[in-house]
Amino acid sequence: MALTAELVLDAHAALGEGPLWSTREQVLYWVDILAHLVHRYDPKTGENRTCQVDTPVGVVVERARGGLAIGTKRGFAGLDFATARVEPWCHPEADRPQNRLNDGKCDSAGRFWAGSESPDKSGGFHRLDADHRATTMLTGIGCSNGLAWSADDRTLYYIDTFTAEVAAFPFDAKAGTLGARRVAITVDSKEHGWPDGMCIDAEGMLWVGHWGGSRINRWDPRSGKLLATVPLPVSQVTSCAFSGPKLDHLYVTSASTGLSDAERKRQPHAGGLFRIQTGPIGLPSVPFAG
Image: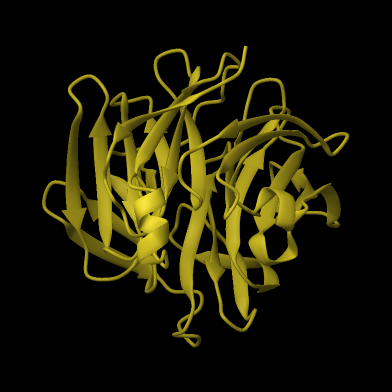
């Protein structure tokens, strides 16, 4: 049966990104980077609440102690959603003000990984430990986007959009370190659009949003083969996350920034939040330990 995408929130986000399903609250957190907003969408009520911060925010994760952690143009910080209070922690790229943290997730030990978007490929991919200290794990990054760990915790899949590839790194879960990079998937950007955010399902398959491609693709990272395509009525598909009590739905974010007037007419729901009933069950997110 062909999978279809349902519009659940016609948000008209400028740059919707970073969906995160909270198993604790049974809600979806996501961000609008350019609007400096963290969103909280409750599928039971349809209510979407927002929290305004004073800088572009590229990623949000939960904290094990309660509350949220974010990655922004000013580095890593804690966030109290109810009061919008931001607690700055550290800024691994303070010497590169043109860069900003863009996408991230927590590994099984609760370490917060996030990379940056950089116009001159001076960005990095960083690991934030529970003591709020950051370690740079990769350098020379252009646009850090999707990341996901295999269920056995032995592989980290990672996207730098500018490479049009999904890379795979051997992962030492105890030490939180990476081995040598290899290419798991090569994306034809003319056909599919550029690989952006992604998540992994319980079968080890990767679901990738494709910027400029109007689609979510399901890829097999072991063979590099395309398994399925879900079309969306918007071109700038940014990221996705499994959700729901059974983790069998996929929320998908999108963007409206940069579209011409003609493109906006053809894509009236650009920047919307979509949902796909997938069948394959996802893996739960892990909160930040710090």
